[in-house]
Length: 132
Image (cartoon, rainbow, N blue to C red; front, side, top):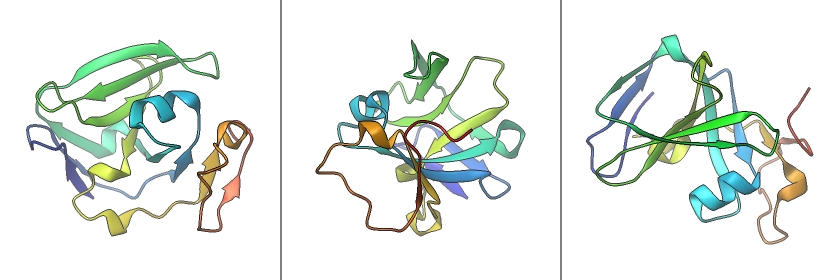
């Protein structure tokens, strides 16, 4: 799977399929995307090769954990997210894929925060918070 930011300055390639993928309805994702959810895929960091400069923004997530968002400093596209700096996983945002048909969501997390106007049309497992 390959993808890039809006201007093309940041590119990535994932060498394996995502560990899991879906829709996140947490308030942070809503604010970061300007809509009701983000479309995410989780990969092991060792399986994702990145080129280009990334900037970060760090906050505490709804779960209470550190959340870091990575974006292109030129165009502002959000490309990745992760937990603390030593997190061994990347969240890759599906809208940045070169071929968005490769995104196969399997779940919806933080459904408790989903706006009434943002309902999935695909049958996916739903969780009020994060699955245990």
